[in-house]
Length: 579
Image 1 (cartoon, rainbow, N blue to C red):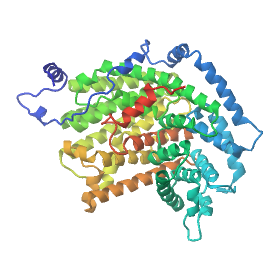
Image 2 (cartoon, rainbow, N blue to C red; image 1 turned 90 degrees about the vertical axis):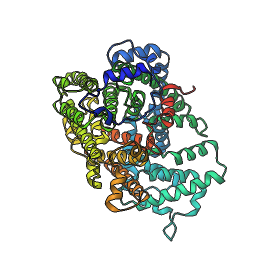
Image 3 (cartoon, rainbow, N blue to C red; image 1 turned 45 degrees about the vertical axis):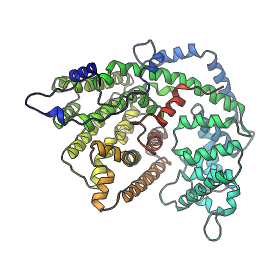
Image 4 (cartoon, rainbow, N blue to C red; image 1 turned 180 degrees about the vertical axis):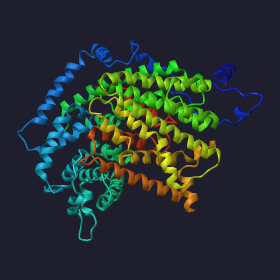
């Protein structure tokens, strides 16, 4: 670090004094600096505030040619979906393509109506009644489950032999095998047949890609799906990939393809402006200079939240949620790496009081965080109060208080070398994933549908939010454990489980992976009708889980953001789809 950098550090961060060696006992981690620096500032709006009408008006000026094209193509797709000249079942492939290409959000009502018709016509007492090939039945099953319909997996028994195994002859039907493989990722508890289907199809498809010649489109689909299962993938990234291979589809629909390309690029321009504005806000906080111990990841935070909801109408919601997760990242690093127990107790108390008058009680570096946090929520409150939904902010603040208390508990555990019991660990550390808080905050900007009943539900530890937090906690622990223990970190699930049950690290990892799989089943089950809240809210939890599933598959790609996170951001925010 340069001399000038050291002077900056000493100005903003607490200094040691003659009576204390406090500074000497601070932990720090050498996180790599921001990859993007000020790249996205070029897209920032000239407007001071994040105002959607102004941004969209500016977008219309930039895309005055594209928008009419998109509108005309949408009309054509609308006609396809609402046509009565064919049976509803014939529209399954159309709906699947629309969803995969990422343009489904334009046609939610029409798609729901077709799926209702299909369910009414071809499902009796939860059983799919049609007789068809494997591909069609698996596609029907997957789309029904994706749209919340409770349908039995017993329909796949017809593809087994007399010994109860899947027929080996199915391996000749690669499209059918792929369709069954994708359907198996929507399994819920006690669905042995889908567990068997996953094992059977994944093994056979791996072999097929190695030893058989497939069409370019099918080969690309199979290889990608084996690497990243569709239902667990990030919707916008999956759409980007599918657009690139759909061009090779033997029966491609040119209208769908053109609409998908234009729409993706249109949204990319809008999202770039959002990231530019949030980068401007981040630069004003001057995090990299004033808080150099923390991860500088504002662009990564933006891309994280775009995976939760990308639609233009959720612009305001994305602003608050991105600010929240970016500040939480700093707070996490403060509790994990830098703050002393005394300072952390002060900060926890200040959060619990949630009042600017407590600023003077905090060290200088904590004031930066606290002031920014109160400012972000106050601005959001001004917006939701206009809608008569001021209560939503209160729920978010209460969840914030619970989160920092969990952070403090972890810090105290580390400070005293305490290794918790497994369930005690999960109770605290699923809260510190921030997913309960983020899910609550996610709903604040979602408009009138986010009633107070929805906030009462989300803050009462619903199964889907708990399951999402478990996936986050355990996947993070599996891939980050060795790195974090080397630098000094509270005992993870692996250490807790190993100590409590006297097992090896490998056995602890297997247990964590089993719990992740079970949590996914909980998520799938909670998305089946009748649901406790509208599906629009459940999808946010699902999308948050998808982000963790992708970005924490082999390593913590948020902390170490030079790999697939960088590629994700390039695909999502930098490189347009070739027209």
